[in-house]
Structures are given as structure tokens and as C-alpha cells.
Image 1 (tube, rainbow, N blue to C red):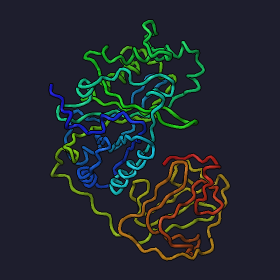
Image 2 (cartoon, rainbow, N blue to C red):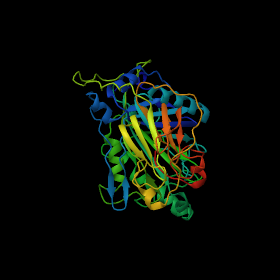
Image 3 (cartoon, one colour):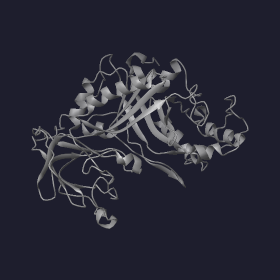
Length: 430
């Protein structure tokens, strides 16, 4: 077949020294996000669309479907489907940050950023376990025949794997080699390796038909948590799915030995549209899909600071991407339903003043739209827009734009964040 390399997203061919992967959830109007993607000019990034977004606008992408959870015995691959994916390759981490930041700002009115994961090249393209990654990648024209459909589009699997590296490192070197089926010393495959070895379970040519993939995986993390962001492109989802099912032992009961040393934490499929040289080439949307009702102009959001209790918010709110007009948000740090209050402050003995002295600041003017309230992972509540903060009895404390409010319970400047969440070891999802 003639390979449509000229129609592919240009960044799909990059083998960078640094990168960032971004994943978004639709914020409100699917058509508005779709149009923003059509207008996007970001040739330095690979953009993928999730099945949920495609269905929401009534478009058709044959072969696209959500990733489904895989499980057998004690091992599982979770499904975490989202609406938009981007791979942003770069020469260095600073350039990756700048390009990712521009993309986030372009899509922020339409989609909530759920994950931003910085990636890096390790040694000569090694995984953090010390084994060379991507040895089986097809090269040249074969790579594009593997990764691209006839129109230049591609499908991609994105999985964040957490390495249990201490456990793996505790194995003797020959046992580590047997897990991968390849010697770390010279990158050579071991013919007599166990059948559970990773290279044997995922040998692309052993499938019928062969299940070739183009990998663009890269390591992520720091000294505490680290692993591999598995990124794999193919002209269809079937080869990817068959490899995953064989790793899990769903075909024959034999599971990949690597599963005992690395755990999948996420999993999503996306479709990467063709590129016409300027813009993404997106399929037509259904004429029957109605735009979402525009968000109303809103009065200033009010935050009531409850004595020894939560933050009570009223107004036109968007809390972690969900519209609301009223909410009780945890500020003691103990709720099992963060960011929302579940009355854990009553059981934990949380003590914090509710009536505070006024802060003399210029009054903020109301803005159209909803006030965004976004929990920061392991950190505070970040607000966008004007906010009226009042004490428990209703007396004004301040009216400001974009306050950052404590939700760990440790700030010495409540209700505002003073960074104490970091030293307190506060843990909470975004």
C-alpha cells in the first residue's frame, strides 16, 4: 500500500530527549471543544481524540472504542478513558514545558486538564529498569505502515506504568534477565528464557496476523515514584488489544512476568486524526447535536468559612469540571470524599476560626461565566475568578480574584494556603 506519511501528524515521528503527555476531560460544550481542536495549529504535538468526545459530537471514527479494564487473578490494567490526549516532544524539558503550556492555555476554556506527565529520555533509550526499550520497533517505511491508516490517521494506547523497581532490583541479575527475556548487559534475547518472559509474551511476529506496533514510550517520575508512560501507535486497535490480552494471560493463562514488577495505573485509547499541513482533519459532526447552553453571567462567588468546619460555596461554580451552584468543600483534610466535605471534621477534632478580621483589598468585579474551583493534587483549592469570602456570621473578610484556599487543615493562614500541605505530607487527588 502507499504509505500516507505526508498526512500524518508530524510530531508522531519524533524521538525526543524530553516530552510531556497531557490528557483532558470535556468541560462542557463538546462542539466548542471540537471547533477549538479544528482551529488548533500545534504541529509540534500529537493530538488524539477519545471515543467519548467523538460520540458527543455525533462524528464517526470506525474502529475507535473506549479502553476496557483487563483483569486476571491479582493483576489488572485499569481503564481511565478521557477525551483529548497530546504528546508534546521536545529537545529539552524547558521547551516541552513551554509547548505544553501553550496547548493547555488553548484548550483550557473547553476541557479540564486531568493529567500532565513530564517524560524524559534515560541513557540511550533505556527503561528505568535498565533494559533498552523499543528494540522491536519497525523502521523506515515499515514504521509508517504499522502506525498509519490509509488516510494518515493512527490509533494510540496510553498507559502509565508504575515500576516496583526496588522489588525488581532485589532479584539476581539472571532472574531479572528472565523477566524481560533479554540480557541487560548486551541487549540480546535469551532463547532459553521462560515462556513468561516479556519479550516472548509480546513478540509481535508471533501473533496471527502479526501485531506490530510503533512505540514512543518514555520514562517518567522522580526518586519516589517512577515508571514508563507506554505510548504505542498502530493503524488499528486490534494489534494493541491482542498484545495486552496476551500479557494478561487471557488467551492461554500464562501471564507476563513483568506484571509482578510494574503496575498499570491508567489506560486509554485515542484516535489521532490526519494533518493537512496546517490543521487536524476532523470528521463531520452530526447536525442533530445541539451546542450546550452558554454559561450565564455570574455574580461573585461567595465562600463562607465555617468555624471548625468546611468551606461553603455558592454561586455559578465549576468544581473540578462539574457545574454546581452550591457545595461544601473539605478544609480539615480528613474527608473520604475530597474535595467535598463528609463531616469528618466533627470526628477529627478539627479546629479553625470562622470569623476572621477583614482584609483590606480592592473589590473584584464580577465576570461572566462560572467561577472555577480546581483541587490541586496533594495541594490546595485553586479558584479562578472573583470570590467574596465571608466569615461564619456573614461578615465580609475580603473580595479578591483567584484565591488559593487550604484544604489540608495545616495552614497557619487559614482559610488561605501557606504551603503547609507539602511538609504535612497531605495526599489527595486533583
